[in-house]
Length: 251
Image (cartoon, rainbow, N blue to C red; front, side, top):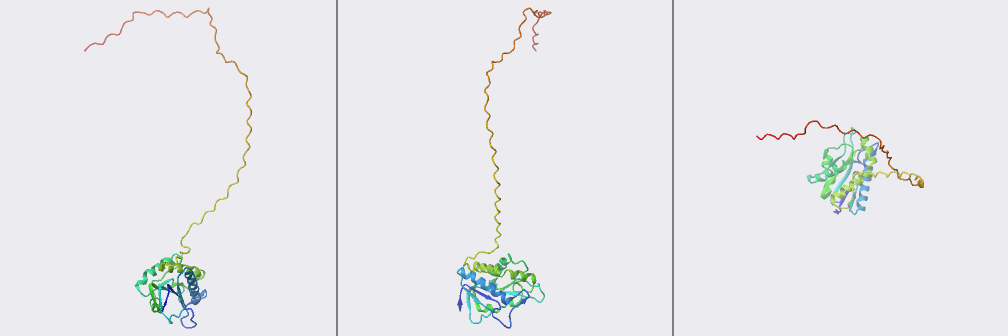
């Protein structure tokens, strides 16, 4: 029995006859699964995670790991009828399956199929060779025979590998591999260029104050009195006798 943190299998790798996987004019499963498997293994090992990296043939041994992932792509005779999916053997694997779907859905822009929707997902031969403490999952990344999905997959194989490495690292609590490209950080706004300083206008010199000649205080004009002018006549004499107001009657 081989013991490690993780087992990663590239589906169909190494087969020349029989079950060699699906293919289309955009790519072949047997070529794409090793790309993701190799890159995921590299990232994990560099983070201190021990990985057993296997191809299609698992029969030579058994494997005791924390998590095992078997990597595949789907295909369909009627293009675009399928999508991403996940398979597992035991109910105890469901939390890990749900976590993968939640993570991959942040990147994968196409549809999902139900868990274990085919016999191959439910009864994958690799399950019987692994003993896991967390989960064993068969991951179908998408449909290779659907043009839109296949082009997206082809252009993101290395990115998918990083997402998978982060997922595994988080599940086993080792490696601390950050989640790639999900945390949508707002780009820093460029600082606007400084406006050129306006030239300072020269200050006009202060004009000296011209001294003023002292002025004599202005005297108010006085109208001379004509002594010879006649005085106004005296008020005419009051008529009658001034009496006091009558007293108020006492009730």
